[in-house]
Image (cartoon, rainbow, N blue to C red; front, side):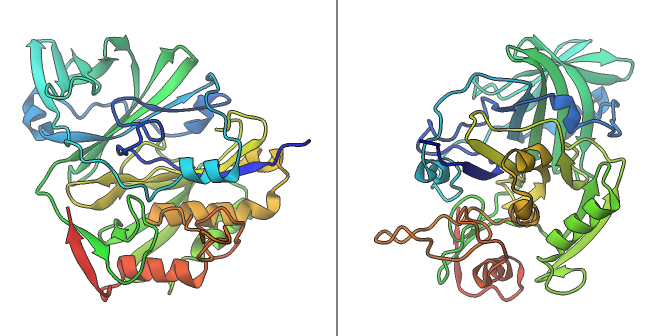
Length: 383
């Protein structure tokens, strides 16, 4: 009997869940693989100038690690997915998170030439070691493993920074991306009391961009590909340059920074790399939003659309829906997996589910309106 084909529109989120077998914490990287990970950064403009120096070490005190991703050329398959129910369970974004301590990273001088960056109170979290090169400190090791830094990125307001590097893992040459956010004054999250929308960290808990989203089509694209991406993304607009009350722009950057850069928000078309680990599985796209739990906001994001995966399952008719779905994650929407317990059918039509609904539904638009409108309706505050 031919197995059923399982299709994934993915999202990478780094927060602990009560079931640790289903969602890892930030201490261990989420590892993704199948192909040459260098294609993810091919043709990009990398910044090898570190922003860490003796003069500004105090500026980077009290940050927390909010993203930890490895992209490897291969890996050992574990725990194959065998049903649509298991697929949705593994990719759910509305599983309540267990209480956890927010890390607080600090620099510590080992000697005049070497410093470390870590949280001593949570020893399982990665420890970074930097060595002095002229007036800058450059990352050289993580937990004693040698790494080669590829791109340093610091936001203009200093709220978030990232470091992209390569290293030799047991799977081969691997890309690792780390994202840190500033632990400023803790804000409360809004939980809507009237509508049970699927957002990134829990149902009805609003997490979005603060004022505007400047999105870029990054990397080489043909004119037809650009038109397809533009058409798919623009479906979210409620007026030119607006998604509800969120200011929005879309441009084309044929030469952009690597995906980890926190000063750009890219959607990229990727060929030569896939994420699936079993023959009857297809990962068509993925979004990587970075959330600062201190501010309750998305502070950086990136999205990959996997060309080879669409070809693998002959799903070109789903290409535009994949793009629209992943941009929904970038905007702050989670997976809409709520099903009627009696019929097993989706409760809501939504492009954010896995039920092959190909267009943005009224439910999706209401979720965006609640997230970004200045008149958001009834809500309470949660920590």
